Structure formats: structure tokens, C-alpha cells
Image (cartoon, rainbow, N blue to C red; front, side, top):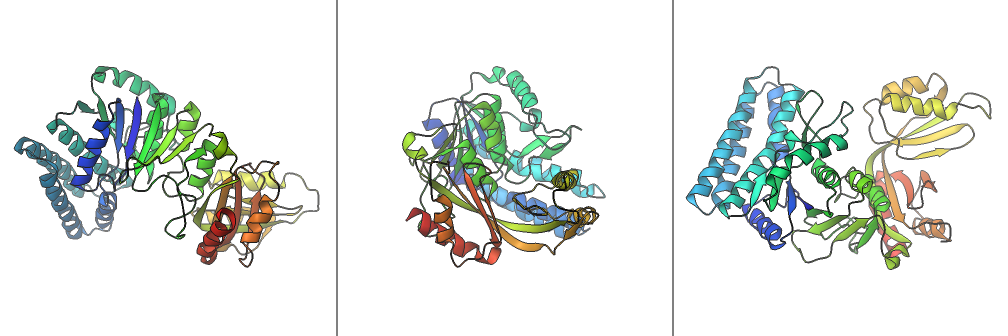
Length: 444
């Protein structure tokens, strides 16, 4: 069995859904199809929720009726028969009736907001399943809220998901297509929750790992993962193969095509992930697997990604040289406030770290200040990550990177933590210049 995931732009128009139907039926393999919400829907629902939280009920009603009008037009173009249209209209009426009911709950809490945001995926999957039924496609809707679970730390419970699917899939063994929702799940209290923004990729990987799929395919509107950001750099090209470790580095450090968490379940269960283009389905895309072909593995530089919104902290010990326990105390503070560190550079008496979440920065600084001296943080920084095969038998790697970056100020360098990653910290104003300079220096 395969898992195919389609994002919001891939299902954002009726003709796109028609194209997806052709794609998934042209390939006769049995598959789970994971869908995101229609493009723009999640943002519209969040905006509606903000109005409710602010007590602007009239504004909220206006926003939701505007969104419903969009769906009314959508179903008129999606279905070809009167029965199909009637089914689509019933789905829209039912879901928007529930959305309107949320306006009667005061105050509007985070629990209601998560129920509200889930409506995007509930709408898209029901509409698509009804369209497949109209077309006579052997299919069934398997609600993600019945099998997708997260724990108290908001982490997916892969073993529980696997157990649930093992019980739920056999009754549908005669169906070629199993449709389900991305992004949404239930938490330990049984409440509707989600895998955070971009989590539909994660859903596909969790399902693929749970059922030991032959392959997970992530369908987007670009031909696989590119060697650089095509929005900034003109001369980019798709990467045909990446290892799990390489892809994980790129996803975490800003490659937009792939959600950072996607790789983990697939890697854990050894399920290959392929990135495909709905606009050009015959293009090979990018294959991510445990191993790559020898010709690909011999390439030193594979790709570049950038992560914005970084804050750098500079921490100096107030104790004598050779003091032990200094790093441990620092890391314990970041762990206590659940704030991951991206990069780290150390010397005998100082540590520089970067973080991308400043929600608890003041509290972290207060605790660090009890035994450290702190410089003023650097805000609006960017991490540029170069990924490739940087094993010790490849000399001159750092030299080529730094030569390409001459003239661009670098605040921090991380090299040697893995054989796949060199990361550079700089002010965000230099990002575009750095991406273009590295592209020219490393690939041309």
C-alpha cells in the first residue's frame, strides 16, 4: 500500500481535485490519500476565530458567510450530476452549521479554535470522497480523528496510531482508495487537536510508517526539493535523491517543500518518501531514502536552505577557567522552558546559541543571569544551512564555503556536528546575497 498526500494548493480548485482523481486512479496501486484543507481555508478560519475572541461577532459572521459562498461555488463546479451536487451541498451545510454554532460558545477558547481549524480538512476530505463516489471510484473516508493520537507533550503516538489502523483498515480491504485528513488528531483528553501548521506532511509520514507503506508520496506544486530557494535564486535545479539525514537537515533549516517533522516516522520504519509535482506528474521528483545511488552519494554539495527569525544569545561564565557543569546548567534551563537550540558554539568560558522561539526568552535570561554574564541578543538573524556529503575524505569543503561567502559578515559557524551540515549565522539582511553567492560558488 502507498500513501499519497496532497496539499492545499493541490486541492484548492475543483479542476485540481479532478486532476487528483485522475492521478490516483491512473496508478492502480492501493493507497491512502491524505488531503489538506483547500488553500486559504485555514487562514480564513483562524481569522474568523480571532474575531470571535475579540467579541466582534458581526465581523465573524461576515467572514464565515464569505467563506461559505466560496464553498458553494466550489461544489457547483466540482460535481457533474445533480446527486453529486446535492451530496456536496449537504456536506457544506452541515459543516458550516457546526462552524456557526461555535459563535454561541462564550468565551471562545483554544479548544473551540482547534475544533474550528479542523473544519478545513473535514470539508476537503468529505467533498473529495463524495466526488470519487460520483465518479464510481472504489473509495472510503477514514476519519483521522478516529486513529491519529498525540500525547501530553503534543508528540504523535506512532505505536497507538499503528494499532488503531491495524483495526480500522481490514474492513475496507476491498477499497482501492482510502481518503483521510491531514493535520488533525485527538489529544489525551479526547479533544480535537492538530499537528501544528504544515502537519499534513507529518500525517502522511505517520500513516506510512504505521502501515509500513511501500512509499510515501508528498505531492506539491514544485518539482521536488531544489538545491536552493527558487524564490530567491534564479538558477536552481531539483535534487533527485537525498538520504533521510540530508532531507531532515534541509527541512529543519527552512526548505519549504517539506515539513520538518515529516522525515522522522518514515526514517524510523524505513519507508521511502518521494516528493512529486501535481503540475508535472511525470517528473521524477525527489526520492528520500536510507541510501542513495553511488553517483548521488559522491556529490559533495547537495542543497542549501535558510531559516529566518533566529535570535542569538551570547553567554559568558563568571567562574574561573576549567569550571565543570557550565554547559549542563545552560542546557537544563533551555530544556525546562522547552526551547530548542538550533546552533551552538563554545569556548572555554563562553557559549553562543541560537533559538527560533523567544516566547520564554525573558525567563531564560533571568535564570542564566544568576550564574552568567549575558550580552544583548542579536535578533532578526538567519541560519543558512549547506547540506551534502562532508565526510573527512573530502578536503577543502569549509574553504569552498567560506570563499563563496567572502564579503558577507558571518556571526557563527557550525561544522562537524554531522557529516551532512555546515550552518552559518548572519543577519537576515544578508540572506538573499548569501544564497546566491553560495549557489554560484558551490554549484557553478
